[in-house]
Image (cartoon, rainbow, N blue to C red; front, side, top):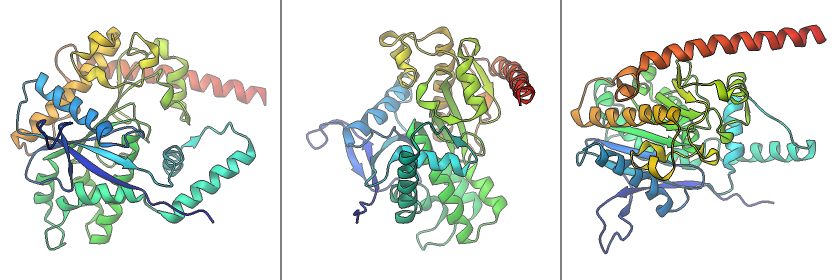
Length: 360
């Protein structure tokens, strides 16, 4: 009998470099609810504090480039997946969201996959690492110290003091946390309309997300390349069309999923999944295309405006347009491009379906 190894997670926090913190980070077992904080959820290889610290460092450098020198704490997640397989975990999420994962493996291997997914669901119906992160980051914002639910206004105020940044599998982690939070709040007695309102007060910015983009629990903006091969293994007609027509995909915004995308972000094609372009300085070491500069500037603006909104203690989240606008980014133009591309895509898909019907 296979022994199950539980999954887990912890946080590191950026601190000034010192003999006690030679890598400029320390373990953090809680995040104060009264201090603005941004938490990075990295890809599935983020399994050591040093790996996680690279994400927190990136966000801190972004803040410093934009003259945000204090007022925000920077955290990052360290994963321990135990017996869980992140790729299978993501496949299960897409199934839950109504997507069909492309199945191109031998039936015997497919049976092994199905058995592994069933074992994961049996041993950890919700991944332990997701529950641990939820209990550290979000539950203290919706319950009092006496484990009683707080009033909505207090909860919203506390959620406005934290935002998430995700890369790759990080988006999957946040999606799972949103689902778990929804179930937990139902258990606490929150009304469904209040849960929706509360969860939408958390801002998430994600790059190259491998997670369902529609029906998000939180207010989520996604930024991606149509040529990112890491995102092409889920059978979504939209994603497949993007991949097949990437050379024609100009910078665009798609309201369905709050997705900002362009065909090719980096001059070096193997870098399409990389997220370091949010830094001004990154463009010199890994040159971006013009379209890449537009998408990464929009992402940078969203992160910076989100940070400033936290520091200001604003009562509301900025609109999508206000988050991304500025410098070379014109949200209205991106939206118009998205609407045109969407019409072209629908026309292409209808013609393809029509041809298939005639062939039957």
